[in-house]
Length: 97
Image (cartoon, rainbow, N blue to C red; front, side, top):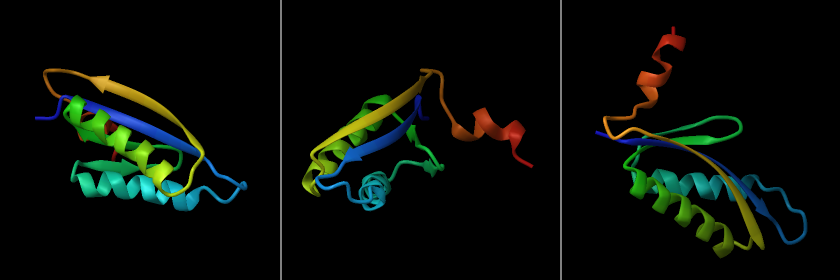
């Protein structure tokens, strides 16, 4: 069972002020390739899994930004950690119809 939720908003700085959406798309690809459950929202993406694995994905996302030409990146990260178990569905089920 997962023990953490990690939400990330990645804000890459581009060389010439280019649109950041292709960079964000690449960051989401890193999450997709990891195989962890995730949800994309307008301002952040939330992942569910083991804390160490999720933090490694955050690291790979930042590295991917550099690989495709970003000069720097800001990652705003929120972590929910519960050794007894963490679930996106459990935390939001009362809001779903």
